Image (cartoon, rainbow, N blue to C red):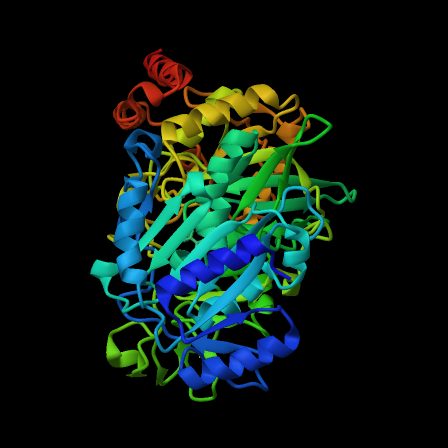
Amino acid sequence: MPNTKVALWVDEMAKLCKPDKIYWCDGSEEEKKRLTQDALKTGELHDLNQEKLPGCYLHRSHQNDVARTEHLTFICTPTKDEAGPTNNWMAPAEAYDKLGKIFDGSMKGRTMYVIPFLMGSWGSPYAKIGVELTDSLYVVLNMRILTRIGNRVWDLLGDSDRFTRCLHARADLDLSRRFICHFPQDNTIWSVGSAYGGNVLLGKKCLALRLASYMGRNENWMAEHMLILGVEDPSGKTTYIAAAFPSACGKTNLAMMVPPPSQTGYKIWTVGDDIAWLHIGKDGRLWAVNPEAGFFGVAPGTNRKSNPNAMASVEKNAIFTNVLKRPDGTVWWEGMDGEVPAEGIDWKGEKWTPSAGTKGANPNSRFTAPASQCPSISPEWENPEGVPISAILFGSRRTHLTPLIYEAFNWQHGTFIGASMASETTAAAQGAVGVLRRDPMAMLPFCGYNMGDYFAHWLKMGALIKNPPKIFCVNWFRQDASGRFLWPGFGENIRVLRWIIERTEGKGSAAESPVGLLPGKNALCLDGLDLSAKDLEQLLDIKRTEWQEEASQIEKFFGQFGDHLPAALGEECRALHKRLRE
Ligand code: OXD
Ligand code: MN
């Protein structure tokens, strides 16, 4: 039973949104069946071939609502300074007032669903409770997959008011009346005018990253945009790695990677593919939990070669968003295995043929699937304490400059590498694709407070962790002058992970460079790989003049944080300049 604090808040929000009905989700299987039928009737879901894809459904979003809208996402702290220069800011009173007017009466004729949910596994001391109110069945059915929902959450909450208050209404999907507002001090999120995943599945980016990063800062833990994986070696030993990459840069593929046959005895275990909550364990190491229960993965490019485990995860009980529907009621997206279908219904709901000259699936089309269905899911993925992390990776999409792999000299240098990360933009957020932007720790769109203070928090955590993980930077996307990718990527990335693990064990040779430690001669296992010596040289090449320009750009980027920038990062930047000159 929900406590009186929940009941009072739901009552207050219902008075604002004025739904015809309020429905309290219990999380049961019977409820899932009933709400799925309701969604089929309202058109929020479309049926698929239930023999070939049991329990799977298709959703088509509005055409103006297919990606996160970062320019409409706000951090509403009492002062602008607390939100920092990289976040949009709105004063809390102004935001409540502005959005309140849009929420007012927005659910007339509709049902308000009350979803009690848990981020983190049952029984985990690190799990956090949220309650989302929404008028979207798509949200309810996705939240069922991505989080743990149901009456058990009320029992966990007891009579406490420590829950995140999440309010969502589709309203009229008008871009000029779309806002995603976060109130860290009130543990509250208000999202209106969108029905796209990252904007409305409020447990994910909004709670588990933006609000959680703020909580972590106050409570000495970290909420990061990181996958978590375990690498089992031929002796049966598993080493855990957390890795931050910007949206749509292959986190899901890396988290579920299948090593090639030449790498006998190595196996990847998936713990999480998008978000990690990191705490200091009793042993002085950093431990990671995945707060989510499912995957919200990018569909295009996913196939049996690039990610067989993701393909197996979506064979049943999945929701597909904005993909193409084939005549036989199965789904397709660009880059899927097999023949391109001769015809289908595209993501806009229109008849499509390959000659249409348009994409059948939206470039940011998605699948939502339960993590438990992933063949590589780790036996530890729901361990309430998490898994101990030996290495942290920062990765980005850079066609030039950044080598395939290098190691930070120490935690402070690693923090600098993360803070200065830049990547070419993707379709996961609205806006131009392929433009280089600084995306510190892949958290630029997800940090719930001033990023300068966030860097300071990283440095503070480094001092608190007795046995900190080693930090590395990877780039699978480097190209030669003709635009050819130099590294095969996907399963072959295990070769890079093997060197990383050796380094965490005090083994594996390394050679110093101005930017960090590169693999020593023959340190990367390249047996059975068709990679020329010239390609390898280019993959690990440090071009001093380009790096000098990079260091100046970083300095400029850091400048915007003013006195919020920790002095140590300024020092790291100067040290990089100096090493490049030597
Ligand atoms: C995501 C994103 O959906 O980062 O995970 O955009
Ligand atoms: Mn993400």
